Length: 218
Image (cartoon, rainbow, N blue to C red; front, side, top):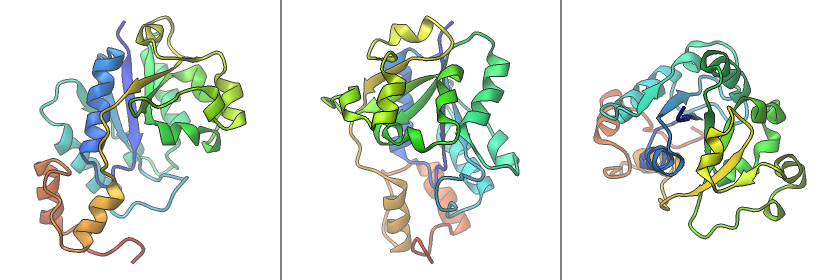
């Protein structure tokens, strides 16, 4: 069975960096699909600037038309904190033996040891890490606790993801895009254009609902 990718985040707002990560993960890791999971109440960071229903709708508009992308609204409908491990437990129960691949950037991966019940993630899914071309993806570059947990899991062979339902950590190169949600929000708050930083349907939705008009922290 070809693996299913899982991409969670606040998507506050979703932009082309998120979309390229998912698209290039599909190609590099031979994923059958990517399931997008907008966080409802992310516990590890400040509250999102806009509410969950707006962020969910922006993701839906951004991925519409790509048959390999699907949106999962379970976290936005839940009143509980949005922990990755609990979402993966739910998805694993439904997926049976199908490989699941949790997708993330290298920076998020290096901070994995701060996540809730993070060691349990390896029993629930593989992890696909998007890196810059030439990035040295080795335990010597990891925090000690993470390096120990990943010592026998690391590689760059996507075929390893089909060998079992979970447990491997596979890196893949991603085209560098210097776009962030904080950059998009700052430009919107300053009244500057965000065209070509995010999909037009998302930009139009933001304009329609007057989102992100105040600077972060206001």
